[in-house]
Amino acid sequence: MEFKDYYRILGVDSTADETAIRAAYRKLARKYHPDKNKESDAEERFKEVNEAYEVLKDKEKRASYDQLRAGGYRGGDSFQPPPGWTQGGPGFDFGGGGDFSDFFESLFGRASGRQAGSYRTRSMRGQDISADIDIDLATAYAGGSTRLGLHDGAGSERVLDVKIPAGIESEKTIRLSGQGHPGAGGGPAGDLLLKVHIRPHARFRLEGRDIVTSLPVAPWEAALGAKVAVPTLGGMVDMQVPAGSQSGRKLRLKGRGLPGKPAGDQLVVLEIHVPPADDEHARKAYAAFRDAFKGYDPR
Image 1 (cartoon, rainbow, N blue to C red):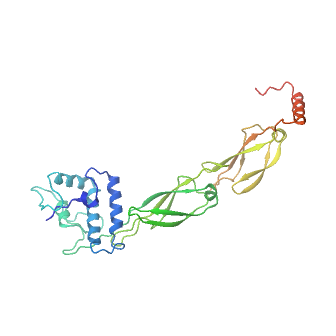
Image 2: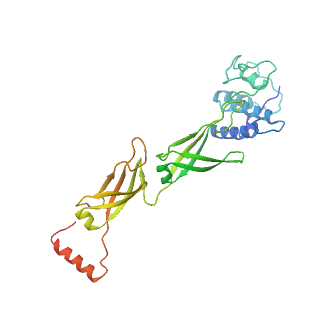
């Protein structure tokens, strides 16, 4: 019986962590999947990759395997389990059927459901894929679609049109069923998990589901009150500025934030802008204004 070097099969170092092992497995499983790779040895390589991952992803199996490998065994060496070696035992459950080599079964026991002389690909759901997607604030507000180019570990690219639901928040996840890595042995494909990032906007800022914007107002509008037009992501809206408003005051437009149940609001921050005193007429007007409020000290 031949000793199998599972690290060499996955192309990783013996010190590789779980993340590196999982990434190597996904890349090779996609490369040698029999539904995609028609080379004569693809199915055999696919089985080897699955078997190697079955051992190296499991802390107990990996520790036992490393113990044997530390004795000097390398891939291709003749191997017999050492005296006193304890197998996993008949009927050891590996999650849905057996497709493992004699070497594997000599170490961990015979997989449940394997028939003598049979060697079939076990059914296994494909791994999920996680990725990020950037959208603008207008799309987050109104919904729509965006095109995403998705690169896999084998160097190929898929282009997907992703539907964006109206009112989605930043850091939320969109799940696309069946768009992950393909399954094995007829198993279903995994899902694609897209974390949403909303790009900054020149005029609006998000605070949860609320939208914040600044609004310039004239001194007389703030002092006397006025109805002014305010830009929102859904269009212009009339808003009443209360008399006696100061710079920094926040006014609320109910339901004008991100759609949802409940919808967010739009918070309008007033900024009093003073006209320039750039001619004699303006300077006289300011002087008269000063004289009218003699004794007022804003500090």
